[in-house]
Length: 193
Image (cartoon, rainbow, N blue to C red; front, side):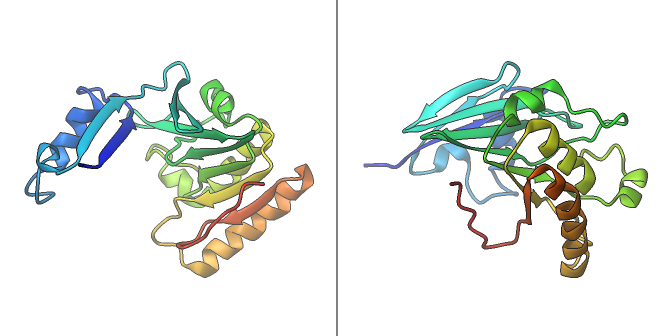
C-alpha cells in the first residue's frame, strides 16, 4: 500500500498552499512533480487566521498567523498536556510589541522555538527582512510566559562564537524571569517535560 502524507501550510496571496508547493516541487527545482510521488499526498491550507487546529493522532496542531513579509504561520503542538510552539520567521515590529496572534499561539508553552536571526546592530540595517533579534525573541518568551526558549534561525554569517555570545546575553536576560534558554544546534534533541 502506498504511504500517505498530510501536509498543512499557510494559504498564499497567490493561491492555495498546494499551488505554492506545486510551483517548486517540479523540474527544474525538483526531479518529479507532486502528482508523480508514489505516495498519496494530501495538501491542505491551515490558514492560521483564527488559530485553526487539526488533530494528528494524539497531537493537536494549531496554526497561527505570524507577522512576516509574506503569509507565514507559526505552529503549536500539544500532546498530553505538554506544548511546543514553533515560530520560524517572525518580523519584529518597529515598536517591539508582540502581536496578539503570537501571544495566542505561544502563551504558556513548555518550549518556544523562535526566530532569533539578528543582533540589534544587524537588525537596524535589515528591519524589514522578516526576522528579529535575539532580544526580541526573549521578550516574546517573557510576554508569553514560556518555560524554555530555543533560539534558532541563526544568521548564516554567525559562527559558533557569535551564537554563544548571543546565547549568554539571552540567558542573562531571561533567567530573571525563570526562563531557560538554549541555542538550537544541528542534531539537538530537546525534551519537553
